Length: 423
Ligand SMILES: Nc1nc2c(ncn2[C@@H]2O[C@H](COP(=O)(O)OP(=O)(O)OP(=O)(O)O)[C@@H](O)[C@H]2O)c(=O)[nH]1
Image (cartoon, rainbow, N blue to C red; front, side):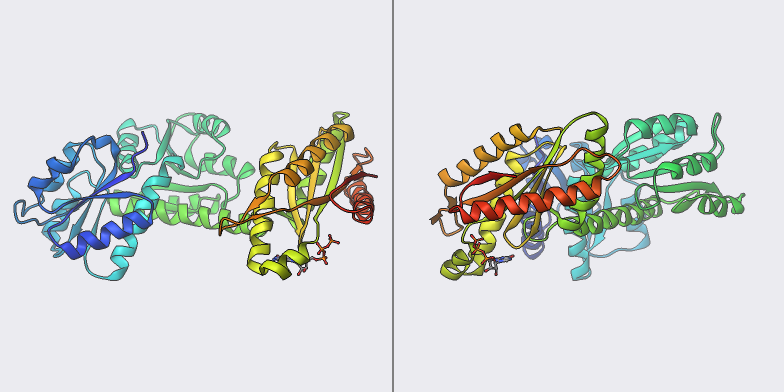
C-alpha cells in the first residue's frame, strides 16, 4: 500500500486550506483534523499516511500533546509552530519529529511542499553509514529513518566498499575515521578511485579534539565533514545540502543528454553512447545497425493544426518509440526536427528490419490521439543500414551507416513514403 495521505492538524482554517493545497499539488490526499480530538475520527489506517503536519498549540492540546499522539501511531510527523521560543523548540526537538516549521513566512510553506516531495522520494535515496560504534550508527539511522531514507550500514571501511559494490547508486556516505580494517580517510580515497564527488557525496565525521581530521577528510576527497557532537538539525542540513548537490548535478547531466521536448537521448549523447555499445557488440561478434526515421509530411501537420499539435505528435512518436524499443542495448534518439534514430546493438539487420516494419505498421494502423481527443493519422519513412563491424573505428563506421541509412530514407520518401527501405 502506497502511503498517499497527509494528515493536517491545525485549528486555523487558513492554514489547513493552504497546507491541503500544497499537499494536493505534491500529489497527496490531505486529511484534516481541526483539533486533537478529531484526529482519531479521521485516522483510518495509519499506514496510509506518508506523514502528518501537526500544530504545536491546539485549543484542546496546548503543549504539543497532539504531536505525541500522532507519533504514537507511527506516522512521521513535522510540527507547525506559531510562536517559537527556545523552550518550545527544545521541547519539539526532544521528540522524534521530522522537523519543525515556523508559520512565519511564505518560504516556510514552500519548505512544507519540498519536505513532502522529499519524504516521498527519499525511499529511493540510499545513504551509507560507516562507523564501528553501533550506538553511533543507531543514532544516525534513527534520524535518517524519520525522513524515509533507505539506510545501509557498515562497521569499517572494507565492509563499506563491499556495500558500495552491491549498491553503486548510494548517494551519500557518512563515515567515521577510527575503525578497524580500514579507516575513514582510506575509505574516502578508495571511493574516489571509482566515484567522483558529484556522483557520491562523502561526509566525514571528526571529533572536536582532532581539528586537523576535517581538513584531511576534505583533502582526500570528502565533500563535507561533521564535528562531533552535532545537533540533529546540523546533521540534516549537511545531509540535505550534499544530497541536493548530487541531485542537481544528476539533473544537469540528464538535461544535457536528453531532448527537451521528447525526453529521448539527444544527438550529442547518442554519439557518446553508440560507439561504446558498438565496440562491446563487435568484440562479442554481434551485429549492430542503424535506422533513421522521418515523419511523413510533418510540415503539413504543423501548417494544418499548428506548431503545438506538431509538438504533441513528436512527443507521442517518442513515447511509441520508447515502448517498442526498450532494451538497454538499443538507443532511441531524436536527431532534430521530425527525424529520429534507432541504434540496435546485438541485433541482426534482418531482425531490426522485422521490428521496424512492425513499428511502421503500428503507426499506420493506430492514429495518434491529440489532447483535444481528435485522432490524427501519422506515418513514417525509415532507412536502415547495417554497421560494418570494426571495433577499432566505431565512430567512423557509425557515421558511414548513418549516411547509408539516410540514403535509404531518401529512397523511401521518393518511393511514396510510409516505407522501410534497407541500404
Ligand atoms: N512542431 C514542430 N515542428 C518542427 C520541429 N522541428 C522541426 N519542425 C518542422 O518540421 C517540418 C519538416 O518539414 P519538411 O522537412 O519539409 O518535411 P515534411 O513536411 O515532413 O515532408 P517529408 O519529410 O518530405 O515527408 C518543418 O515545417 C519544421 O518547421 C519541432 O520541434 N516542433
